[in-house]
Length: 386
Image 1 (tube, helix red, strand yellow):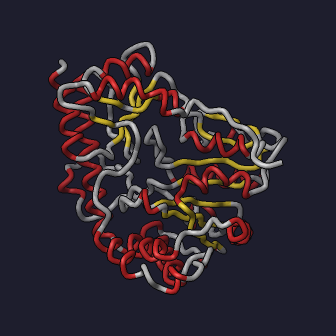
Image 2 (cartoon, helix red, strand yellow):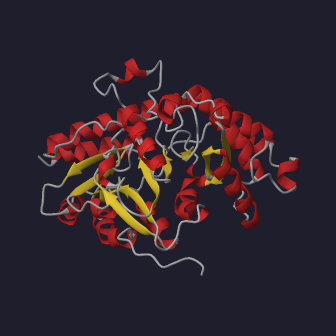
Image 3 (cartoon, rainbow, N blue to C red):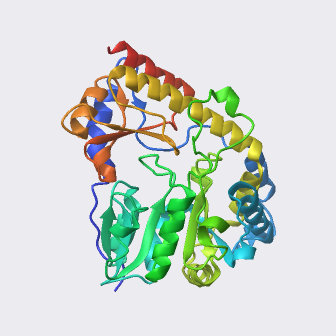
């Protein structure tokens, strides 16, 4: 059968004309569209990669399940950063080649197919829907996945996507909401797929000045936390990525953790089709997981940039607010739709991401992953346009 066909509005060629207009601006383009990190990779990560460049895990085939050191680092990270004891709740973990391949292949890896339904948020990362489509299953979109009555009585639900903190909206689901989702999914035999890639970027104290946020990093509730999953990982899978916390998007370092039966079956299949993180990159990933000083530094950069963007967008006329989490400002358009606003902003040399890509054509997404200089330039132009 192979992969099924898919359809999606997520086509960056549709943004090309706006980027061309923005590039013609006297000061050049400020690209706030794609959430691609612009800051340096931590030195600890670079050193680990160099040191492992000629290791046995480099010239030999690497372990699909991860080296013993990487697996230890993942267990440590879940324990210290997510308040989760993976082994105690019957969970296993496997590294993935970035989180996007894990998201895109998740329905297929779970053997979800024709006649099955996968639930997801209406405004969400487009790859959830694409992954469901290529598996041959049907997508069911709901405004709020935590409103379990909107999907728990549907026939054929096999999996439920959760994204907290959410890309693009920034919404964070509290522990009680996460528990409702887990309980409802278990009752109907569905797997909870919790994309927690922005977990360490929850801005619950958004009114605090950045200098008051240095001591600790806020963490959104994890689907594998004992008070959410009831101390049992059964039917729950969590995805996490180092792309944003450690600026390692190009390293393709992420993981799936959860129900050991599901993870081990996925690991065996991943081994057969070569979905394996390169050996030296596994060493770099372990270093990134352990370097919390670098994570804290990046965390504070993003908070400062989000604050600057919110102020400037509000001054320009948008109803902008600090998100509960993640790295994006999600605002309703001033014009008739996202494309009209894209045109107005391109004239200022600024390119956000059209909300239509995420299922909401009346919205725009502004990314805080640009450099400090670019964020400051965008703010200056928005203020000057008044």
